[in-house]
Amino acid sequence: MATPIAMPKLGLSMKTGTLGKWLKKEGDSVKKGEALVEVMTDKITNKVEAPADGILLKIISAKGVKLPVGGLMGVIGEAGEDISAVLAAGPATSADAAPTAAAPGGKVKISPAARKMADDAGIDYTRIAGTGPEGRITKEDVEKAIESGVGSADDRATLKVIPYEGMRKAIGENMLASWTSNAKVTQHVSVDMSGILALRKTINEGAKDKDKISVTALLTKAVARAVEINPIVNLTLDGDEVKTLKDINIGMAVAVPDGLIVPVIRNANEKKLAQVNAEINDLAKRGRKNKLDPDEMSGGTFTITNLGGYGSVDWFTPIINPPESAILGIGRTIDKPVVVKGEIVIRPMMGLSLSFDHRIIDGAPAAEWLAVLIKLIENPQKIFI
Picture 1 (cartoon, rainbow, N blue to C red):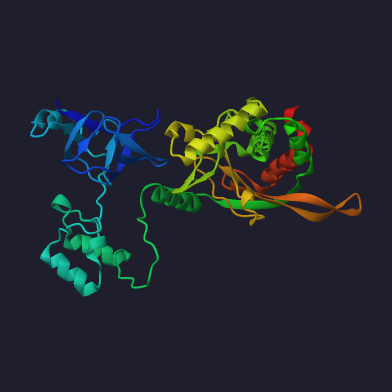
Picture 2 (cartoon, rainbow, N blue to C red; picture 1 turned 90 degrees about the horizontal axis):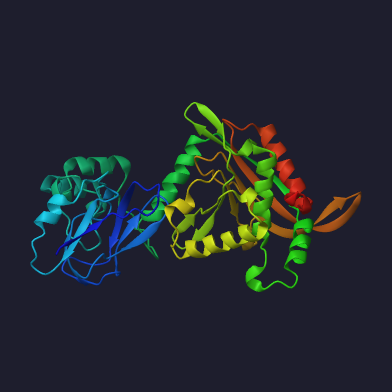
């Protein structure tokens, strides 16, 4: 009996998914549970497994097509099996079918007039997404490509070419949207980490490696406590309303091979330090293996992005993660001479960069929030009071 391959629901909030690369071709044998096709959301890329043994009889939806949850992607069955009933029953309506350019080495469908226009303009038509029947490139497609510069010849030598798609494209579009839609301001400051480092050393004395508390966990608790004391950064702009959010859900930016993900520590202010530490480690580990659900990367109210571990950045300008209204960038910690009670001493100083949406958060309240955070970091026992 033929088995439909449907767009899976990868999280409670997921409504649509975009097909990525098919890992099998029509006519290939597949085993139940074998990776079959990649599906992309705006947050992650997951590999969908075959729902049954058999042969991949039909690929219904091609790479780049956006489908609603339950939408028909393909059909598995026995050789020669009639799949008309599955095709008739399966909801294959595209939520937003995006035309895609031909795959490298693939056959390009293009009208003679469009081909001549592309050749005359010096346009590489294999890089143009066709909108005609069966993906055929039309004169209108070429005209749009000429206007936008897509497909323009670039003869410079390259070491590597990576398609701008999937997670990389989603990140780029989200970052651009954030940069252009927010009235962003960034405040920078250095903070003395002596207290945090001393507290961490005390907490970790005699602890097993797997149970040791990280600096990131302590900073996360400090941030959550600062938001609890002064929720001015825990805002969102919803239409013509500015909402102060009740929950304090801290997003943690994590670098992964294909880009960046932001898993969320929910109600971080209410959790014990050990629990926050364990969640950070678990989410980061599973995130790097692409094992997180979209729900684990949604619902954040304030994000932390930490570049301190690279040892090369003091301050930077983090980009706000919409619909949040603020984000904290953490730089490296290095020993610096500072003045304490009139004397020059060496202290471990860390850079902080707070970016916020000036449409709804003014500079003075943002500076007041930073002052609260600095006091907590420099007097870490107050984090737990």
